[in-house]
Image 1 (cartoon, rainbow, N blue to C red):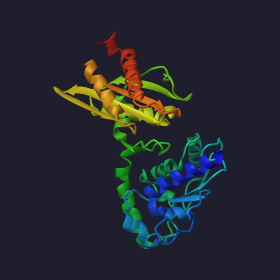
Image 2: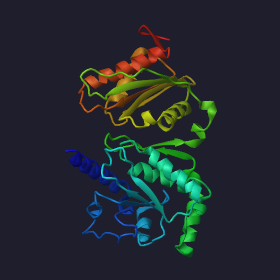
Image 3: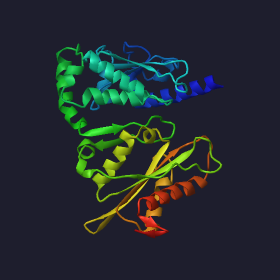
Image 4: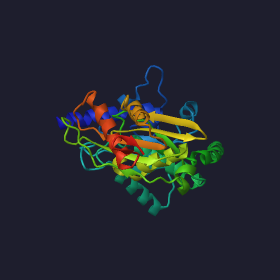
Amino acid sequence: MEKEEIYSRRSEELEALLAYYGNDLSSTLAPSPVPSAQNTDTENDVSLDGPWFLRIRHRSDDTEKNESNSSNPGIPTLEIRLPASYPLGVDPPTPILHNIMMNPQSKQIFLKELIDMYDGFEVGILWGERCREELFSSDSTNNYIDNIEGNDAVNAENDNVDESRNDASLRTFIPSTTKFSQPIRHFPTAVIEDQSYRRVMVHTPPFHPPKSGSSEIMIAHVCSVHCKEHVQWALAELLFNDKKVARASHNMFAYRFTKDGVLVSDNDDDGEKGSGAKLASLLQLSRVDNVLVVVSRWFGGIHLGPARFKHIASVGRDGLVLAGFLTDGSQR
């Protein structure tokens, strides 16, 4: 039974990797020929047992460019070797970097960082995007890439170095699994590194909904906000610096603030359809302003039906009370 679940999870992950990386997902280090119109099923060529190879390109590369360079052996590549229990067991996959020139000590530190990201969830996209960030988010891109592609590739790489300045302006959060339909999020580094936007967050104790799975919990995170930058900083703080929150099944949120006499509000389901609107309604009905409320949910395996929205709103309200925005049902 466990083996069936392992292969089911791997199959879902391969499907997600194929959708995200296309022809850059392979079963071998040597790039495979570009698939013809009659044979485009890359997933069938990649074994569920691994290893899996992801060619890591600059984000600005388009599909046509990828296909024209598909026979090039010098593209930076991440090899993922899978232990028998992946992704259910405690043993992490083994990451191996090919066609990348890095300081040996820096390389070992980076590989350890990848391994530490594993915690019983699928890591293919997470590792691939972290490698892309490491390779192309600084002006020293040429120091990392073992360029053996000739003069044309040198020119293309120089273009990529110029483009990488734009990549460096964003930091990307990749959910730990595709199972819960959470979106990939991008945050401006200028905002999340600016301590003037720093927020003090209040967190509720874990709530275990009745009739839910043993591992099901919900936690609210609340802080004051007065601009979009405050919202971005707070969300980035949770997702990048709290490993438990980063692995939540959903991090739904809503916010509202008044700026220059104009009410600004928005919400996000984070894959839990309808939950963002529920939190937005909570803020509106409570008549609170200048606040962000995030509710993290770790799914426990038992579907709660419509009752989950009641629990999400209740946990969100507890957070507003704990943070001082509400007292005994009234606004601060």
